[in-house]
Amino acid sequence: MTVVYPGLDSPEFEQGFAAVRDEIVALGEVFDRLGIAKRDAAALDAATVAAFDEAIGRMNATLEGVQTLGAYISSFVTTDSRNDLAQARMSEFQSTTTQLSQLSTRLTAWLGALDIDALLARSETARMHEFMLRRAQEESHHLMSPAEEELASELELSSGSAWAKLHGNVSSQLLVNIERDGETVSLPMSEVRNLAYDPERETRRLAYEAELAAWVTHAVPLAAALNSIKGQVNTLTQRRGWESPLDEALFGNNIDRTTLDAMLTAARESFPDFRRYLRAKAKALGLDALAWYDIFAPLAESTRVWDYAQGRDFIIGVFGDYSPKMGGFAERAFRENWIDAEPRPGKRDGAFCMGLRGDESRILANYKPVFAGVSTLAHELGHGYHNLNRADRTYLQRTTPMTLAETASIFCETLIRDAALRDSDSGEQLAILEASLQGSCQVVVDITSRFLFEQAVFEGRLERELSVDELNELMLDSQRQTYGDGLDGGALHPYMWAVKGHYYSTGRSYYNYPYMFGLLFGLGLYARFQAAPDEFRGSYDNLLASTGEADAATLANRFGIDITTPDFWRASLAIVREDIDRFEGLVTG
Picture 1 (cartoon, one colour):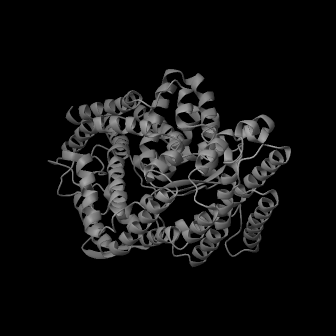
Picture 2 (picture 1 turned 120 degrees about the vertical axis):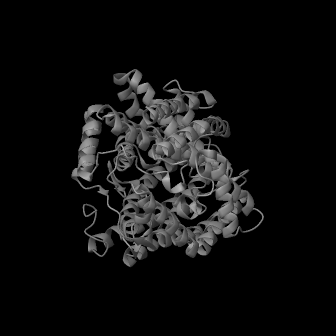
Picture 3 (picture 1 turned 30 degrees about the vertical axis):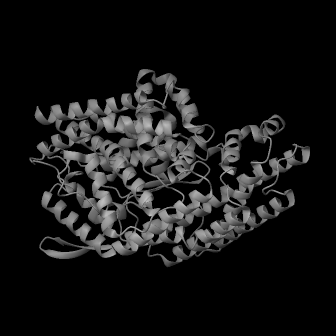
């Protein structure tokens, strides 16, 4: 991160922060001068066209600076939540960007009153941002009064964002007491959860039980956070005229209910196949049934250790075989140290990629020396490759919904998997297939359970707050509906609602189903790649560059894909089913 600023306490950072703050203030002054605010519809004149061009240009420039500053501060908070200076800077940053959020709402309200077709005819800037304009016009119909939107934005810092920060800080700083080698030690939650990949079942069981015990001691404040966030979303959703939080989330993800229902229909049809995979894995492990803590257990046949250097070299090689552009990107990411890889106390669990500036990204991971760790790195580098392809677009042009944000990550993950399968013996193939099916099972089966849970929480929260026991039971019920007899019903995970930070955001309701969309859409695209590799490469990069400029259905149509019916989703899941058949054959053969 020193390529941006030497440190959070450096004069350069202070100057950069002040510059972003001043730019936001200046943007507000520009909006005041141009009259960018809610107004009645009026004929489009030359002054309004000029005002639009200036406002969009300044907004794009301001957002670029905000992205870099926010990513810089976030890199310190997420890798060490005990860093008090970073936490203070993040709080200052959030306060600073509250005004930007208000200005964005003012712009949306103003655009809602414009004649968009007339504007498109008179402004090149408008034609570059047509998709954003049409979405803004629709969104403007769901805005409260300017005073209410301003108040909601200001209160977010002490409501939804504060509850989200509580969850992030508590979960990242949580130390878990666990028995290791005959003595009790305290480990970060991220390390304890990584023990789910340990080859020894007793270690996995002890880690699972220790994890649950730790969540019990912190469940009350986390339940308060979840209740508060979902209550706030319900209230604002109603006040803005959305039928439900799901409808608002679908709009934000550029898909409709028809598409979601088609995908979920195909997913439910696939559950028997995934349960068949889980039972085959249990057989491979010599178990009657998998417990929750066996889901990520490595299979004994795997003999290859994927240390970080091996994973790096493999990814660079496979990406390079796909295209020089992708290979060069991966080599640069490792060479320039874009990846924070190892688990540490205070570091957030999981993995993510964030854009930093221009074509640069940064990746947080908690690397494990197994194929799943390599797969996760490839997934996050896929996000970075997506950012690379969008780099020449304006900020507003490249704003991408979660549904399409997973396209490149899944594609790159699949590239890595297929290459590993080609270069492995039968034992290693079983391990690689198993790692891939682990991921697919999580994204289809577990994601559906999370969707059902969140839906139930939103519905219950309309009436009252939900207790810890009620949240646990809703989670268990969701897991029973999806995993069924694929897992031991007496060893599920009632506290997954505390684990997943995805639930703890007012701006990312139903953060779950886009992952399933990304997996299945990515697999569908991968099938197109296998059928015509050379033709696919150029059009694929163009697709990635355009994910903020059209809805999902329109982009899919470029590849002859209809996402509004179950058939496409069934075809993608058929690819997974073939892997399950192959896995079963290796287990029994």
